[in-house]
Image: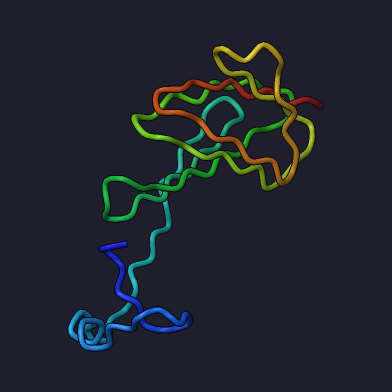
Length: 120
């Protein structure tokens, strides 16, 4: 790839001069992003928005026996279920609800809306 500067770990060409010219050796305190929290009808959303427009992390916690629709985003989204085991997801164009449990990963296309229902 033309946009990669290799530094090692492979037998390919290592462009040490370009790499060392790209690096900065300034120490700094990392910016901690604590996220902004909103709560509504049994749903807690925490958004972590770094200083880049094309990326963010959204943590969504849904209480049992709740249904919520996640609004579509302008770009692709990935849903990672990291807790729980009794939920389903429905999306436009999908005839069968998808079972959600810890470890499930869903890819959403841009502007795709998904509804998540938890049980118990």
